[in-house]
Image (tube, rainbow, N blue to C red; front, side, top):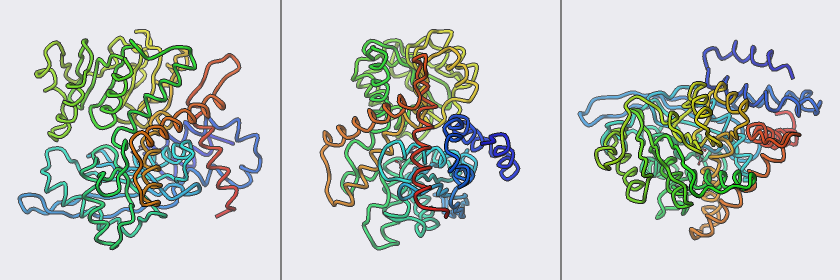
Length: 445
Ligand code: 2IT
């Protein structure tokens, strides 16, 4: 495989799509050696076919705000690859959303979903709509208008969306409600639904819980335990909340959370009340964490800064792509961090990953660590198809098993001769091999 040529071709075709090109390059670098041992992949142009989405749908989303004024946004769905199963992946509503970001997310999703061992292809969608400061009615009207543009492309065996940044249970409910009206079928096409209309227990917690189960597996492999370890978490949304909840339950001390406005340092560590307060902060719709420091004495707010400057044992980026850069990584390494597990998608820049690998610190990539979210979505799809609902214990047990299995796959493909486990390489190779195998089996199409 000539990575330079493939990347040059892609850059010429998709100039300026930097997140997408970054995600592709990372995977190609990881799988290069294995790929070259399979001349049939080259003959069938597996990589060239895999890096282009199957289909991209873009549409205008027009809605009325509370003043009765007309608003326009752009909607997208990137159906990346359905070799393994129906397209599956979240919807992101954020002002920063563009095609490059959704293509990178859809690409990553394809391998992540393959790692879960469940039959799901990869997709991602979203809009440049910013939920910040919008009323509940505005959110509803936007979600409904978004569905008008997308519903024809969805279906339980075609494409099943879910939440992501800016899209939680409320938004999924509004979108699914409109979808259901349009198709006149209650067929479960959306995961993260409310418990009373087909949602799965543990889905809200799943991304964070799954991440901590993965961290437990890493530590077990090293002969360590999470108890008593200090943890830095970024973000304060659904993923950060689930991670904080499980880390605390397992006896770790979570000392930071963060928002676009800066980060909170809470040396006493988060407890049940503080973790509940994260939900309140999110529900306010203001997208800031500063009020935490006013509410909980002993904690401090650092405006415009990131939590990676704190001395901790474990760093869990839970906010957004490229939130840990080279300088952040070097600071973490200098402060003696021993494990960095990305819970956000592509949370670390290539420079940050290099810094961790160079220092031989365990770095685990988002597509493995955060796969518990979409895995539990897969379990929601199964429950919908069977028209039944499992108990929390049943779902949690399955989530545990899936995360342990992903960890094993990473070790299988990522363990080096010197014993160091390169989780990035392991996850990329394991995911790639499964998608490549499925594509090979279905011929050139
Ligand atoms: O990045 C992700 O895996 C998600 N936003 C969840 C996707 C899903 O379909 O549950």
